[in-house]
Image (cartoon, rainbow, N blue to C red; front, top):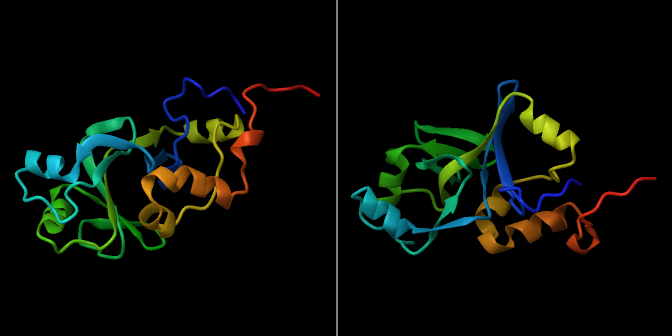
Length: 170
């Protein structure tokens, strides 16, 4: 594995939502911002939601001023499916629905996203810069933010104690 000590994605678990010839897009699901839902909703002049002290997640370095919501089957006309039981909503509509107490039961709110240009993610995978594994609604919605990295490692049988920061040659 390459040395990732200075990489901004070091330790990140990314839920990949889209990947095609034009690039890839996803959300870092294990990094919180200092902002809570109450803070975000106050900035948008929306009433605080039931889970007001829940943290807003740092979805990635691209467009950190934009909000995104990954949520369960509470699909709206502005939602698009991005995985089994996972939908993506962009914009104010879903936040208004959440503020009104009529939103999805399971959701995460993000500022920004992780994005890759054409071929960029493929090259990073060839360089072994990422470990890959299955993501699903249980990981995104049922696993606590601070346990997502460990949960993903366990899913793929990875033991961090066996990882070396140095490459060898045979």
